[in-house]
Structures are given as C-alpha cells and as structure tokens.
Amino acid sequence: MRYPGFFLLIVTICNSVLFAPGCQAKNQLAREIGRVEFQSSGCFHQVYEELRLVQKGAEVIATLKSTERTEQATLSNAQIYAFHLFIKQLKVLKEVNGCTTMSTYKAVVGKELIQKKDGGCSWNGFDELRKALFNK
Image (cartoon, rainbow, N blue to C red; front, side):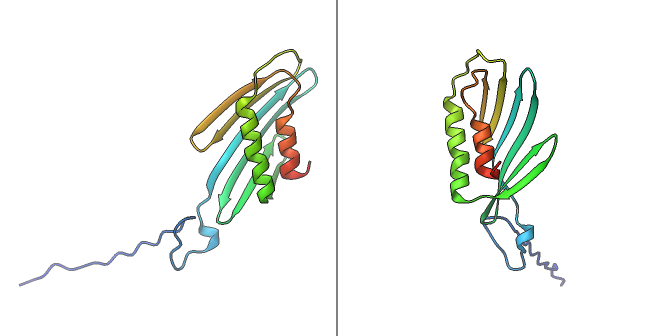
C-alpha cells in the first residue's frame, strides 16, 4: 500500500508588523501615512508639488517631488505632528476667492480624501509644512 507524499512549504513574510527570522530591514514593506498634491498658480507662477509620508520600520520618511527636484527627509515626532496639524487645518479651510493666486490641495490620509481650493491668499499651509519638514 502506498501513502501519499507530504510536502512542507514554509513561507516567510516580512512586513512592518510581523518579522520572521531571515527578514532584512531593507525588505520591509513601506506603509503610506499620507500624500498631499499641491498646485498653485497666479499671475507670475505655476507650481506643482507632491508630498508623500511613508513609514518604513520605525522611521517616517517624507518625499517632496516637484518639477525641479526631489527631496527626502527622515522625520522627527515634531515634524510628523506638523503634518497632522496641516491636515487638520486643511480640513477646516474655507474655500474663498479674492486673490489672483489659486491654490489647490488634494490630500489622502488613510482612506480619507480631502480636496480644497483656496483663492484667499491668507493661508500658506503648504509653504509652512514644507519649511517644517525640509527646513526650506
């Protein structure tokens, strides 16, 4: 009488929650915390920038892309707080007009999508966020 053969299959999973033996830090999956697309246009300028915050292991890394450059920074807790404060302010931003500059925001945090247009020239939230994260 023959017995069916047995096969043993071992699967190693590496992610930010479960670390199996043999996983390297470089193999950890990155988890997106949030993303902001910022566009500003006026009489003398046209700007498009995209900011992404990604958690990789214990670090949170911010990447800022524009038509001119790409920058990255590993964030401190204070800088992560600055991002969350920006999102909080963006949620309550009143969409007003009256300025020749129009700023458009599209933010995704988790499953939440926030879209706003600001033509009031009184809130410089993205500029302040950029300064807080990249010292620029």
